[in-house]
Length: 405
Ligand code: PMT
Image 1 (tube, rainbow, N blue to C red):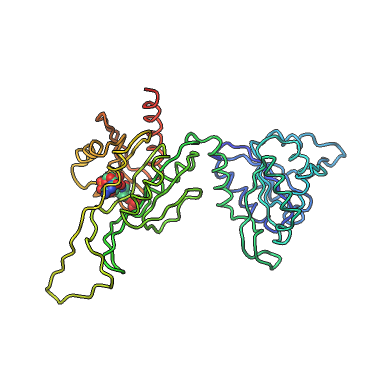
Image 2 (image 1 turned 90 degrees about the vertical axis):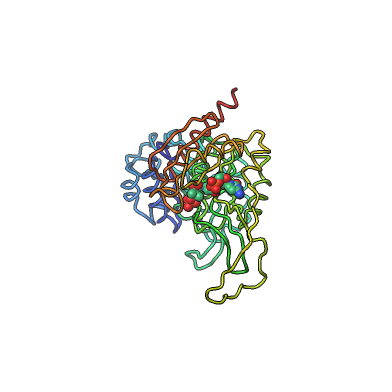
C-alpha cells in the first residue's frame, strides 16, 4: 500500500522527533517517496541534515531560500504529496492549523495542500487535555483532517498519561490502513476469518485440542485488512498478536466459535474458515482436576460429535462467498472435493499437513485451490502471507464472476 506513495512528513518541535527519523527510514523501505518539512523549533532537536540524508531529499524549513528569495519550490510540496503526515504534531501546530495560520513553511504547506492530512499529536498530557487543544482537534476532525490518537504512558516531562507519539510500526499500520480503506481492492467488503484451533475441556486444567497456531488464519486476516476489508477474526487460543484493525472475537470451544460466526454471518460478504475445529468434545467435563489412575489401568473419555460450523454456514448461504480449508494426511484432492460438496462451498484450500513446510505451525504452506466445477490450482511452497494474498485474489475473481452471472 505504501509502495510508490508520495508522503510529506511535517516535523514539529517535540521530544518524540527521534522516532520520526526511524519512521522516514521505514517508509522508504516500504517503497514510499518521502519529503520532510521541519519547523525551526524541530531543527533545534534534530539536524535537518539527518532528515535530508534519510529521506534522500533536501529537508525544507524556510519559506526563504537563503538569498532573500521566496522559495516557491518548497511551497509546491503542498501539491506534490499524496498525503501529509504531521508527526510529532505539537499543540502549537494544531492551533495554527485550526486557525488557518500560515507563518512558516510547514503551516503554509498545510494550509495550501488539498491532499489527505494526518496529524499525530504528541505533547505533555496537560497540553493534550487542555480544552483549547481538544477544541482544535475537534475542529480539525470536522474539516476532514485525520487524527491518530496518541499513546498513553510515561512522558519526557516526567508525567504519565496520553500524549506519547505512537511507536513507528503503529504509525506505519495506521498509514497502511488509511490508504487501504481508500484504495484497496477489498474496501467495502466484510470478511469473516476463523483461525487457530478450538479446545474442548476435559476438566478445569486439561483439554482436547490440535496443533493449529493460527498463522494461516491470521495471514488471511492481515492480507484482507491490507486490502481495505473490514475483518472479523474469530480465533481460538493463539500465541500470535492479531493484526491491527481486525475486530477480534476470542473463543475457546467449537460451540463458541459457531455462535461467534453466526452472530456476524448474515452481514458478511466473504467467509474464510482457516480454523482447525475440534470435531469431538468430551461428553462430560469434570468439575475438579481428574486424579491419576493406577498404573496399567486405562481411562475412557466418552466423546460427542461437535457441530460442523462450516456445514451450518453452507446450509444458510445467501450472498456469502464461502471458503473452507481442508487439512488432510491422505487422499488430499478426493477428500477436499467431497468437503466442497458436503459443505456447499465456493472454494476450498487443501493442504496435505503431512508434507514438510505445509500445515500446522509452519511459516509456509503448500496448498491446492479446488472449486465446485472440479478445477484445481496447485501452488508451490509459499509463505502463509503469500498464500493468503493469492487466495484473496482468487476469491475476488470468482466472486466477481458469480455476481455478474
Ligand atoms: O494455524 P496454522 O498452524 O497456521 O495451521 C494452518 C491449518 C493447517 C490449521 C490450516 O491451513 C487448515 O488446514 N485449516 C483447516 C483445518 C481443519 O479443521 O480441516 P478439516 O478438513 O477438519 O475441516 C474442513 C473445514 O471445515 C475447515 O475449514 C474447518 O474450519 C471446517 N470445520 C471443520 C470441523 C467442524 N466441526 N467445523 C468446521 O467448521
